Length: 321
Image 1 (cartoon, rainbow, N blue to C red):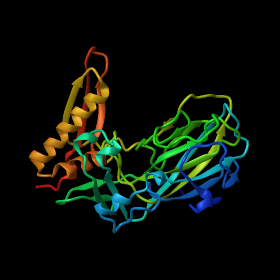
Image 2: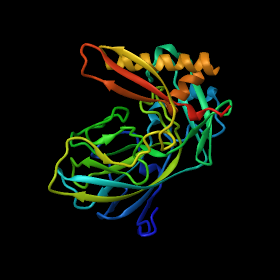
Image 3: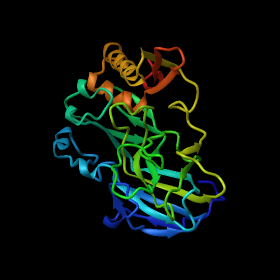
């Protein structure tokens, strides 16, 4: 955090009355803040503490899906009214030294290749010295960010947190790191902002359904912008746009077809096979690594009837020979 940043004005801890698992404009705010205030949010991991650093794959059998996406908040921002824009400047994101990536059983259909990975998988990552440690000396650079940040929708009722919404939510934009600012369209009085689902790292696509999930604290500064309107989240960021924050050698696989989802699956499937055949990883390990460190990119969407999607793997994650 920059030296000229003011001290934190509010600290929000995830006590039982400050954690929720849905978007609902009827949830009472845990506190009210002023524009310009700095707030530190303590966020539980995505499973609400059901997974810890000592968990094993056997623990996934008892996982309560209803507790997934434990959000801290909501916080009311004084003076925010429908039609305004809430500016959320991310000042700091701090982890606790560990995280995990899991693959849920195939019947949950959560993940790009869910049908091909019907058995549960869990990897606990050690997070130290700016990297997440995998198997066989593989190290994924970390750049923590909140996967979920959003404001309450105008529509009455309770809405699940898995799909992203025009008001934000589970947008999983890995570039919302410290120094970034997210802009959210306000739909209700005082905005009612919540945050959670923090990731130490994630490949664009989050293809197995999880990034490197972890409990974290996130410090944000809030402002309300009037006189302009947006229909969906916008943001400003410096990246990093590659895992290391610099240009680096990549290995790519492609999917080509007339459906972007299918082309994405083909690209990831090819990357899983590459990691299995050329790098000696079990297919389950390869799938997890893809979710944590492989970026999906649309290379072209104009040459009808087929589109090109590529999966980019930074070769830097492997120990140098």
